[in-house]
Length: 453
Image (cartoon, rainbow, N blue to C red; front, side, top):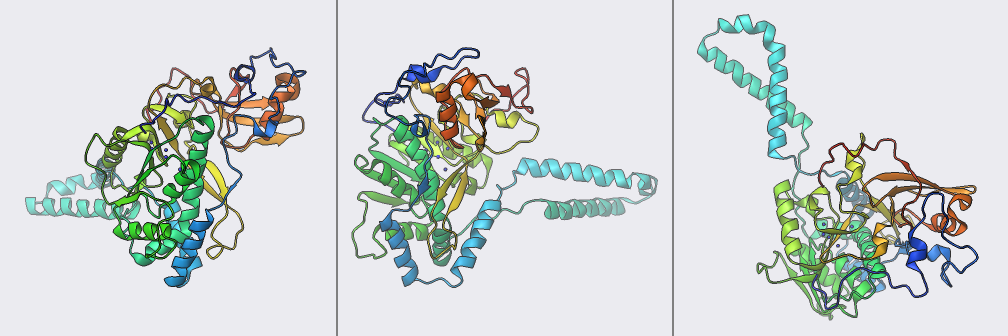
């Protein structure tokens, strides 16, 4: 979310934790063989371990009641046949949807296929020498047709999504809750780690049904005075505005100063405290356009840029989820898996029979300005925490740019750290540094070249 599930602030934006009564120095260093924490002292003062400052995940996210009621009112006025089945279909399609294949990749693949076909035809080369020029040209044309036919069968056929009125309603029912949950999780981390940050303006690229606006209002409603929503679909913009008005065009907007546009502001001088692009960059038709869009969004960022993104959008100071600005260690493994997280949420009751669903997402929050908080080096938990009798397994992304596997026990790492780890979940941070760990088995050595992100 360049939050690239990514702003000029009226106050200083150095990210620091300001939790009264908690000593960061006490939490910050666990050195192998040394236990600096005195268990007889009040380690977290009155703060319980289950609320230690490294916890940034949310329990279960609910849509604001005004938004849920508005969505229900819209669907009652404009009923969609087989809504539950169609929401499942579009969710499955969006989840499996890939990026468009780049032209360079297609050319490379075509050349490889042509070479394979030529190798199969090699035994017939003597026959080909006896052919006249017209027959040779015909053979070449047959080869091109074979290559194209194979490409059509093996290449992903990307198509842009064009939202009409009915498809927008289906998308709203299928994805509005999940997007809201993921964005709320990202905004919650900024708010918890930098409580003094009070943004004045928000830019949401690919705003869709307006979930980002609602999540931002929930987080910083008292300070935000301008919301700029950019979506190329005029139908989607109208739906988002209708939801803000409770489902009735004649009603006032629940959130003031929300503006809808189909294109980004042209002026380079226009900046926003928070810039977000949630689940939108992959809808752009090429890598070049994605990179260009992220660069434009970054220029319009005053403090924080956040997005549900890929490697292409990482630049600047990484506020979250990475505890470093180094290349992503996940891309250095033999088997490349996405760095993703989950957020539980309650779906709209008329779209799903499930009481609880999980939104899985990847995100990055980029920050302008210096980041001097000592807690930035705290490792991020990047897999589900395995709680076992008397020990806890945590898979971590660490500040030195490596993936580590920590087995934490009360005897080896103090009772306080053990209880903090046991109370943590996937996506939280451990309030430690220099933790004795084992490197992940698939990690490459530091001398290996890491792909830039």
